[in-house]
Length: 149
Picture 1 (cartoon, helix red, strand yellow):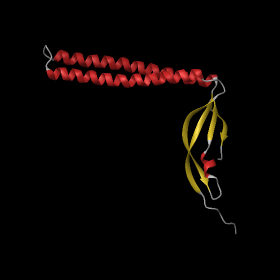
Picture 2 (cartoon, helix red, strand yellow):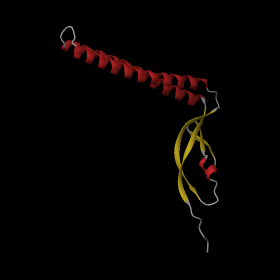
Picture 3 (cartoon, helix red, strand yellow):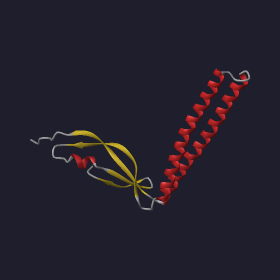
Picture 4 (cartoon, helix red, strand yellow):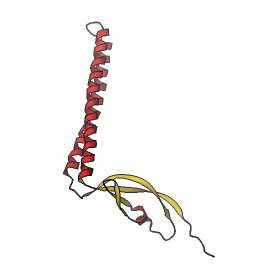
C-alpha cells in the first residue's frame, strides 16, 4: 500500500527580471516619454481649469472682492497648486526613471516587477529554496526560470 505524503498549496512572490536589450530600452523609453507627455497635458488642463474657475468667480463677484470671494479664490489656487505639485512630482519621477533606463548596459539583468504564483510543498521540501524563484525575460519571452519550482 503506497502512502501518499501530505501536500499544501502555497502562494509566493515571483521576481520577474528582464535582460536589457535595445528593443526593451526603446519600448520602456517610449512608455516613459508617453507618461511625461500625458502629465504635461494634465498640467496644461489643470492650469486652464483653475484660470476658468477663478475668472468665473471674479465675473460673478462685486468689485472689490469681499472676504468670502477672496477665500474661494484662495481655495481654488491652493487646490490647483497642490494638484500641480503632485503632477510635477510624478513627472520628475518619470524623468528620473527615463534617465536610469538610458544608463543601463545592454545584456544587464534588471528587476522589472513581481507577481504571485502558487506552489506545492510537502514534508522534506526546503521552503526557503521554494520561495526563491525568479523568471528572466528577454524581449517579453521567458528565457530562464530560476529556483526550485
